[in-house]
Image (cartoon, rainbow, N blue to C red; front, side, top):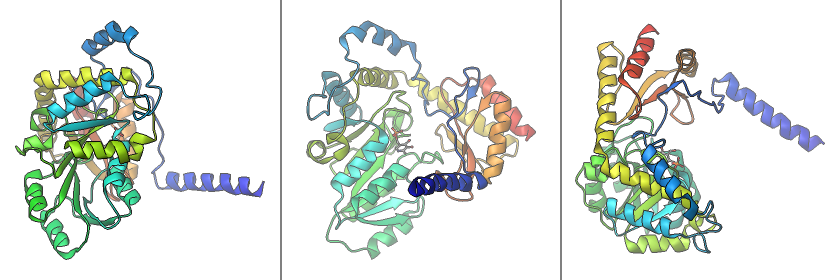
Length: 377
Ligand SMILES: Cc1ncc(COP(=O)(O)O)c(C=O)c1O
């Protein structure tokens, strides 16, 4: 009884603490009549009719679940087709599709990075990268956000018997800015390192949709690993890792979030493949969302609202205080607009914000409504 009381007390006190700091989180069901500016469905593919129709036509043929790990009997032709499509799209020899972006990063880093290696990681990299590094037990060196001088100085100062990895988001999830992969690849080559790019937010957006490597006209090669998720611009669920044949073969054999988990449902893989084809074919979706993002940025700027724009659909309106971010979110909700307040630990202390994301489905009149409400603040 004493243990149970202590356990519940610990939970209650922890919740009280987050509440007192304005860091309490709830899962909100966004009503259908709200305008949503907090979705990563940048290209508006998650509700598209073409894939829904195709799914209806093929439903009888598709199993509802995969039934096992991909190493037992859960690997299906549709997953193989999806992997081949992505490898071709990303111009790599091979690809593996896994359960989610979180599982991809955690599993990839833990599988390839050994204790004697060193990982150089941008300070604003996604939490799944940070967790993967923790699991790897390798030495971790954090460099300042996008600061290549800081990175190079730190590489020079760090000696290792093992392999040096540099890991970065392609498009940063909270800032919307783009990692300078051209310069990073120069550093990777100069110091004989391996580059891992998490292109969760770049896929479908940068490099004519092919991702951030392509934005810089970099040809994929053996010392570059591209990761991405199927849950954002692709509008589905799952993730992928692309690289050379040997890497993917190694991951099939060593990556714990491939081996010890059930394969994705064939229905989900079917959706991913059909949506990915649309992402590749329907360039107008990307042009449209980027035009809308630019429009929002220009209007905010005209109204003296300081916000950065990086030619991606992510615009962060940093208000610093958690309380203020929540107040603005609630005020927008009263007006049937949803922009989530993003607070620590998702972003660093003192940088709480409204993270506004544009999607193909947002209309100009929706953006104007958001603008007029922000102006009223
Ligand atoms: C940069 C980045 N990497 C990885 C992930 C995880 O992807 P997923 O949502 O598919 O788990 C996310 C988003 O959640 C992300 O923003």
